[in-house]
Image (cartoon, rainbow, N blue to C red):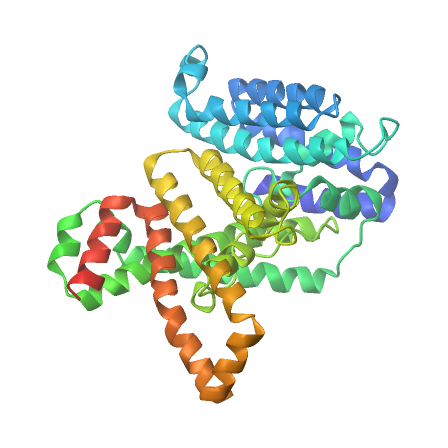
Length: 388
């Protein structure tokens, strides 16, 4: 907390008195904080990853950069690639290192792929210092949210816009409220322990099982509201408008909305560097679904590539496939004429809500796979759908 307070004070002082030296001073301050907070093996490994990816970015080859990104993630997914150096990490240090390298991997990918679009003479924008400032930016370094290099460069390096502190404080206290609320909920409600005691889920009523599932989903959302929100508030001090925290999950009943409005930064990066290069929605349904499949494949691999994440990614992709087909069918003129001839606008909205309800249930269950695993999700499915 003292380090964050010092960052805010230093940012304000430099902005008011020496704005031309603000980036250097905040970068040095951030590095000092990392030297104090992180272990030496963690710092050395992160520096090795960062330097290696910058060298690959200089090739301006999309294939070389993607090969580097996949290898980076592979070192986290397969322990035999890390086995020679694992002995230097304590358990807590290792997990922190995994998170930092995973986040740095996405940022390195963004920097490299953006550099591929530029001429080789664009050295000032894609300098090593700007690259380091982007990767080691303190407000979003570990917790996120993710931003593409172009977004970060325009807001922080090229033309920062300073926000009013009254607006920043409003956001700060809003997220502090939810942080305190989350602590109180976890103190009095023990729904998170149900996943370790599945017999409890088998013995309580279907209503309580449904409440437990809903609590898990809300906890997942509010956790990211707090994490992303506080990081966003700190970034606003520098004039960087990081992506907003997730929307309420009860307002998102489609798979596409869940990805678009839950983790906006990750969604933007997936769309920009994977989905659109594969063709997006403007080059036919086949390329659209292929692009979506590769997006989910990357997300699954980035998260850890275990069985639960594979199921979660596959179910989400199937939901996107179903939604895409439904949207194509319902957007045709013949379908709209048929519906208008039988039902009023109000009745069509009721039918739409009725038809989307099973999709919302599937969306909730697929997210529980991510949070609790397949066995616990099957208990929810059995108690709420088959038996309930």
